[in-house]
Amino acid sequence: MESGATSELAALKTKLRATWIAGDFGEIARFYANQAEDFIKRLDLKPGMNVLDVACGTGNLALPAARAGATVTGVDIAPNLVEQARNNAKAAGLSGKFDEGDAEALPYDDAAFDAVVTMFGAMFAPRPDLVAAELKRVCRPGGFIAMANWTPSGFIGKMFKTTASHVPPPPGMTSPVLWGVEETVRERFGEGISKVETKLQKIHWEFPFSPAEVVEHFRVYYGPTQKAFGALDENGQAALRKDLEQLWTENNQATDGTTSLDADYLEVIARRA
View (cartoon, rainbow, N blue to C red):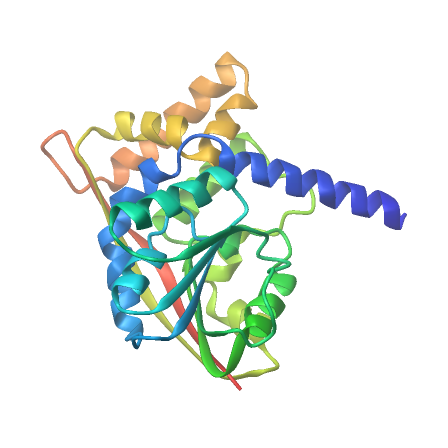
């Protein structure tokens, strides 16, 4: 039984890694890079702090943290994103160390970092209790963990729900957006945390094209959306596209042929005891 469960988990991990390697997440991340920078500014990082960006993607948090004078390490499960983060740091004249690694088994010593940050990243690992334990383990006593997690009721939560109605998530996968529920976050962090502060924040998405073109943009570049479309036949793809276009259109605030909308996320600051 145990070996079966182990092999199922290994298959799920392989699938998730392939999902984030697919597409080109950098083409999604760039549309909220400025707001990722705002997230880092609110943390008031001090020069010389050791900061770990978990599930760093292309460096949306790591780069502004380095710009603030922090000593930055980024880690991500997708090697192509790690490479992009390295290249982005180099292009910006910033130093940082970027590693391939898993949020459920971080390749770092206990209490190695003053701050551990993650934006729309660690929330996607399949075993949240392990993620919480690892984020706490690598954060020094007196340091803090800062997360930005999509909420179930916000726009991106609705997008995930719409997609899941056509392509159910793999077995053994806990819903990522539960990280966007305050009570769940408090429960997961629990022991070893002296204080948890949460605040609802928004990402304001601005795309210079129509909702239908935004759906196509996500289909091409966003791994989870690309994989969802790939799992469906022609009729299934048409149905998913129709529902996603309707969702983006209904929430669009722009009237000039572009797309503009707000997506809620839960900002979490957990102080290490």
